[in-house]
Each structure stands twice: as structure tokens, then as C-alpha cells.
Image 1 (cartoon, rainbow, N blue to C red):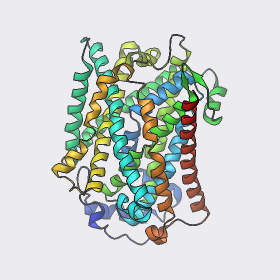
Image 2 (cartoon, one colour):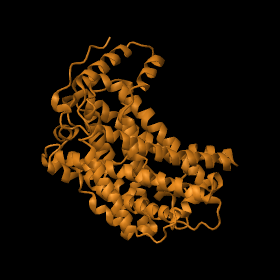
Image 3 (cartoon, helix red, strand yellow):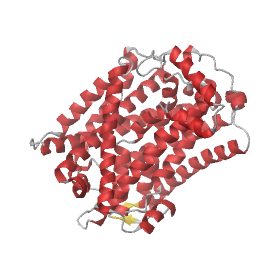
Image 4 (cartoon, one colour):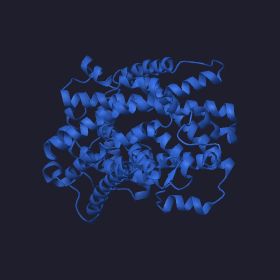
Length: 465
């Protein structure tokens, strides 16, 4: 039987909270439940864990953003079913890395950035933090472009044509600043906001599922090959298959997402007793929803835009993208559902990327959490609002190259966590051992090399074109 866990060190979570400090009595009761579950048969243990899921859903909110939506839309529109394999592979790669991050963080109770600096080296620590910061800022530009474009379209659908993308973008910025200020102040309103976003995001996913149901699958063999053949298609409409593959790999688990995740674990006060729960939380709360959602988007666009001879490529407006829903719920309703769903995706990504910048500021500059300086750090991505001015005409496509640019920061972070996974000085007796540990580390290293290989392939393809 696992020994009861003592209260986690105060500095493991105090000041890192995102909405409110963990309730120590509730945490103690939760740990007792987990200790009791540890002796139960696997099925009963899993059922108990499913009632306690947490940070995995926050990761879903971050990864189901504009970048993921855009990659999936174009993957299906340009290449039909051929790139269905990208979502499960990309998320499986991210899953094995985030599982290691959770094991390391919950085993030691240490904040991850100082731990990486001490045990993997300053190069990996600084590359990880700066990559998380820069990618959070860079990703804001396409998110604002996409959010403002759909707001303009929704205004048009409501009978107010000719709205300004800049005004729409400023409205999104004001909303993002207001919401980011709620974190650390009002747990109740944060929960209301996150549930509201969840409804909007899953509303659009369900509508993509309805389109799949209405349009059907004419070739089940092609669908199966899309998941199993790992095809890398050539060019279509000037877009290379490797471009959308790399975009999908980078969008699934971004370097800023890898930075935020362990801090959400500490913010909840999770510790050693939560390690197995955290693994299941990643599978049920992140992997399964992501793969289902992205696969539905790809299949729906493959059944509609891919078969439309009028579709020309990257110049895809929100109005045109919303036409995917025309066969399911009608063109006008499709515009509203698509617009609100994409808006929910963009808003969730914008606010969570702002939170990431705040945590990076705390670690790099020694800021006090909750201070005015910390608040300013969460505002570092604000220049991203300019995306609505410069890229509003290609708002859906611009997320694809942005995904690739930000994907350049991932390998250093992944390699840093590979080093930590084998560090006896860091993990001590908690360093994984045995055949399972070897396979886990091989998957981590293989995921890193796979990403590096596609980055190299993409660069060579660009240089050769």
C-alpha cells in the first residue's frame, strides 16, 4: 500500500495559483482517496480517477485553438483523408512528453524551470522559457486575425456589414485583458468563463460531427488509410503536404503549452499521490478530445471543400469555411456556429498564452506573483492585436505558417525533459527504471527526433522550391 503523502511544500504552489489557492483540507481528502484507490483493481481505479480529472482539460482548451482549427481545415480541404494520421501521432508525441513532465513535477514538487536550469543545464532552461515566451507572443497575431475576422463576419450575418477588423480586434483585446485579470482574483468567474468557452468550442466540434454524419463516408478504405498509411502527399494548390503535417505536429502541443502545464499541476496543489491520476488525466482530458475533434474537422472538410471544384487553396475566408456546415445545419446557422466556435477557440488560446507569459516573467525576472509587474508580464502578447490589421484577408491560413515558426522552439524543450527524465540527481529514487521506463524514454527521444526530421524536411523543401 502507498504511504500517505504529507502536505506539499508551501513554495511548490503558493503564489502559483491561477484562480485561488488550493484548499488544504480538500487536498488532504483527495490524497486519502487516491491512496485508497491505489489498492483497487485497475477498472475500479480508473473509474475513480475519471471523477477527479483536472489540468488535462485546460490543456485541451489551449491546444484546440485557432492554429489547430486552421491546420485541420486545410488538411481536409486540400488532401482529403490523407492526413488523418497527423492528429493522433502529434498528440501521442505530446502525450509522452507531458506525461514525463507531470511525473517529474509531481515526484519532486519543484518548479520546473529552476529544476531544468539546475539539472539539464542553462541552455535548455533558457531555450524552453524564451521559446514559450516568443511563441506565446507570435501565436497571438494569427489568433487576433482569426478572432477579428469571424467577429466581422458575425456582425455581417447580424445585419451590420462593413465592420472594421481593427475595431473587432480591439474588442477582443479588451476582453482578453479583462479575463486575464480574473485569474488570481475570482475563481468563480474564471470557472464561468471557461465553461462558456467549452460550450462554444464543443458546439463547433459537434457541428463538424453532424456534417460528417450528413455527408457520410463514401470510401471507408480511404478513411482507414488516412489513419494508418502515414502518407506525405505532394503539392496541391501550391501547398506541400509536409507543410500541413509540420503545422499539425507543432499545433498539437506547443512549447508554451509545455511550459504552462506543470504550473497548472502545482497551482492545483497536486503531488506524488496524483502521479497516476495525472497520466490518465492527459489521456482522457487531452488526447481523446483532441483526436476526436481534429479528426471530425478533417473528415468534414474532406467531404465538402475537398470535393468542391471552386475551392482554390489558402484564400479561405471565415464565410467560405463556414460553408462546410451548409449541408448539415444551413448556411446562416453554419456561419453563426462556425464563428462562435472559432471565436471560442481563439479566445481560450489568447488568454492562456497570456497566462504563460506571466509565469515565464515570474521565473525569468523573479517577479512576485500577483504584483503589478506580473500583470504587465501577462500583457506582453498585446502587440498581437496588429494581426487583425495586416492578416485579416488570410486570417484562416496565417495560423499554419505561424504553427511552423513556433514549432522551431519545441526540440530544445523536449531534449531538456529527456535529460531530466534520466537525471538521478533530480529524480532520485523516482527516476523511472525497467523495460517500461526504457520504452518511455525511447518514445520521448523518438518524438523529438521525429519532429526535428520534419523540421529539416520542411526547410529542405523550402530551399529546393
